[in-house]
Image 1 (cartoon, rainbow, N blue to C red):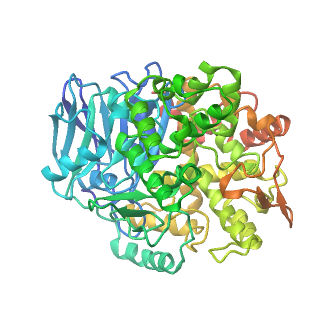
Image 2 (tube, rainbow, N blue to C red):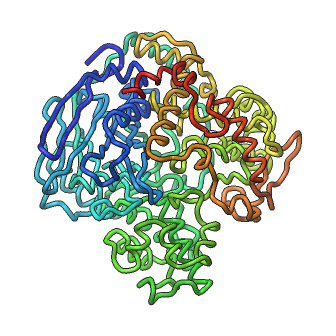
Image 3 (cartoon, rainbow, N blue to C red):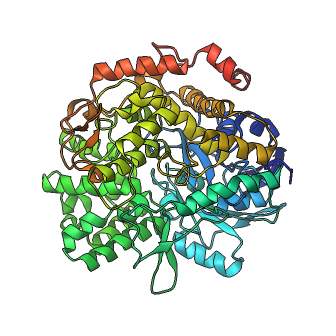
Length: 631
């Protein structure tokens, strides 16, 4: 293990011939830092634009970062990328895994893992420090995720991390996900890659702790970070229920967040966090009209999705789509093979998750994604999508561009729902709403909101939601900052622009980076890497067929269907800050003309060609990408 925070190696496993190789990681880490950046660099050099997502030559790429494994930084995540068909198109996609698995990959001695090829029979990959083996998994193929974990728990010690797929991944469901043994999940349709390779699970353990360049200085820097984290009160979130669940801190995090787990009668613990914890709540309450029974159904829904390996951010709109289509007599029980009148019940969610994962009957159509499913039913069904989804991947709607102008650029330039970027604004907005409504909760005043906009989003204009002014710059700033965090591997839940005093201090991050790696970079230089990684992703998408400016667009309904009151659960009245006033964005649409002008401004800030949205050669040279792209 080196003394600059890195493990120093990339591990590559080719399942077609059980060929295991290792290479130095320095070429990638010097150019892209780690995490999301190194993953994108590895993808560029290893995945052809001409193959599809289930081709053996596709790669599953997992990378940690230089800060991973150092407690007190909240750097326990892992970037995972590959080519998926989440949107129905074979395209580069990404996800982020919390918990311990990415840390243990670092402890095993690797900054990254590339899995390529396809095994003739089901296998697992076992990584124990330098010992890497491919083992037969025929007997466990077909097992649920939790049964897989139980089996490995008996066979291996608690220090082994497991990343697995369930039946949904095995059966190549477009929105299947990866699940780790501590309840962490990776969305983006990445489960299809492991399934297509006959790869059931990846086990990892190691004893090689990373070494910092200047550990004493690192600990000095982290003391106020830990103190600030402990001093900041928790927001009252719908999944934080003290009587039901308890705080659960990711391995090696050292800070903690609002991640929760709860215990079943069996003694096994399950996650209870964010959208995945509450997606079935309202449906269950409508069905049972009984809080206790609805809560039981809500918990079961999350467990079922994890057990089969399905993305809850897609399952939620699938259920909403089925419910609306049933109400409008577009779908019925005979067509779907589902008891649609029982939506919200335990029986319904169990039947739906099983049938989608196994591709049974009409649910095979749903397994190909909501856009495909709606097109098979005709224009009335397609119209229903406006009430359910935010992206072409069929992901749930929440941080709507009709309400939050900045997110229009963010959604339009990403291949999937970019939740880390969306959180940069939505969390600040949510705390501002607490202040507006006088809630006894964590708050940010209008002045606080403006200060964050000035420090982090390029200017106070970004805090005025009544105008497009400043929103192109805000989008660029948010994207570059998010891509830097995901390359360093800084957890979104601890390092978002909301209440902790250390979050907006970019010079602190530069100092932490120096203490770990020994590399001296000022905050602007460090953020340059975020810009570089974002533009690398842009070139990957363009190489794979993204049509530049033409494909930088939103779903059609956002241009022509006014935002209704109650359409967005976290902000029913669509209240936002205006110029020195509180305004509502009810009845708003995204103006096509204004959005195209916003893209002009954004492209100019980015250094992209105004007409095409393609990065200019001067930009690629400045970012140091010309060398890579010419390979």
